[in-house]
Length: 196
Image 1 (cartoon, one colour):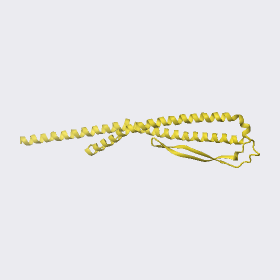
Image 2 (cartoon, one colour):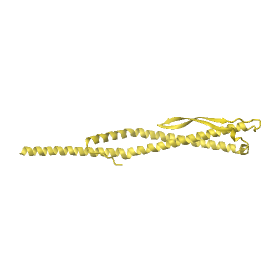
Image 3 (spheres, rainbow, N blue to C red):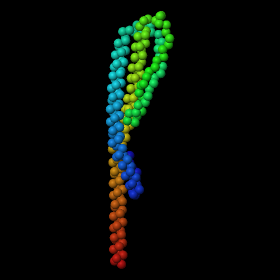
Image 4 (cartoon, rainbow, N blue to C red):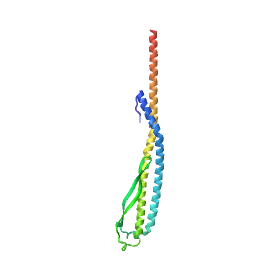
């Protein structure tokens, strides 16, 4: 990305301001990138732990697969999932607050005695699955933002700061040369006038 500039003092001032903005922003962006990296890793780790826990629970309930055929599917459904937002380094990510279930009336006298425990198990599995999905979304948001921040840091460090520094050096050299040339012309003119 070539930085466009003109060889004058106004352009020099603008280049200096832009360079100052980028140099001042770099430490903040680097810190944000580090925070996002650690939070994304933490979210991925927690998500993996939840996946393992969910998998272990599912495997623990697999021995009852014949019993689950008796379970009334209409009896329990996820009603409302309440989430809030949490701000991590300027990124708004979802946070699970509560999961509400809609439980339909069931005739307990005609149902097997394990059905209430089965409902509790299903609630637990559903909560784990929902929490795991929200953590996955959080990790994805944090990782996406971290990548954008890393790109911005690299753009500033490797392209814009050196580009603005080079532009400032070129403009300064041009203005100094122009001033020196102007003084030399004045001396020559003065000497010519003196010799006349």
